[in-house]
Length: 348
Image (cartoon, rainbow, N blue to C red; front, side, top):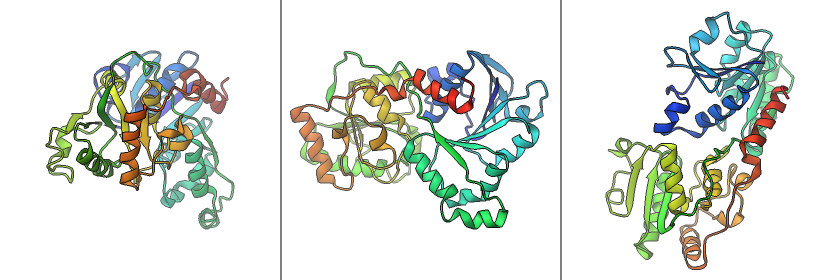
């Protein structure tokens, strides 16, 4: 089979070599892992918006987005579009015989109904990243409100949806390292609840000033002039790591007492950080919403993040009585996830 992945959003020319020395988001790293596995038995291309020349790596050919629509030598059997539903129109016209998929990674609002008729016209299937994500998207695309758009466009068929979990990198594994019981790690972009996390942390260090929080995932310069640029961030209690590559992420995960993520404003569609942390043996302190309770292992990791006292007490209880025992769930192992992809694409 000839498979084309279309990424029309990321500005990075990401590949496996790039990932060795750069911070890379969960979506992009998952694309690479799945593409590499599929390339062992199929011809796989990844289209990127800033790729200037072709590059071959691990059986994957990386090309520019315009090339994916203008070249004639590679006629895909399967087109997998990341996030951008509107591109179904262009790719279905160029490759009318290809099976179309949209790989969704975010919780969409009702404005996505403006693209619904193209999903139905092209017979595309929407691939979500968790069961809760699929249920949310099904409510949007096939729920009561969708009938307004169905009547206007005369496209009445249901949108077909499915879900496949993201795959964990095998390097996220347990290792005998010294854990710093005072080290908390926030590993995400600042817009994903960092303000709420820091409020909890500020309350924590009033009681236990020995704690430090390490913040990774956001460039250091992005904090300048932001709501986070205050006395707390400049204190010795906060260490801003910036964007760090995978090996550094693993190292910090292993040495941290926990991933400190008690926020209730940004639900995760999958929450790769939950899985990565648990796979190295580090618990996560997180609020139960979005995909959290679906993908997280030991439910002792859940806390009501709307209650600062509950957050602080649970963390102090862990320190006194021991952290929750966590491990890697087989659902997220690469081999199992790839089998789900082959089943979804009907290339088993």
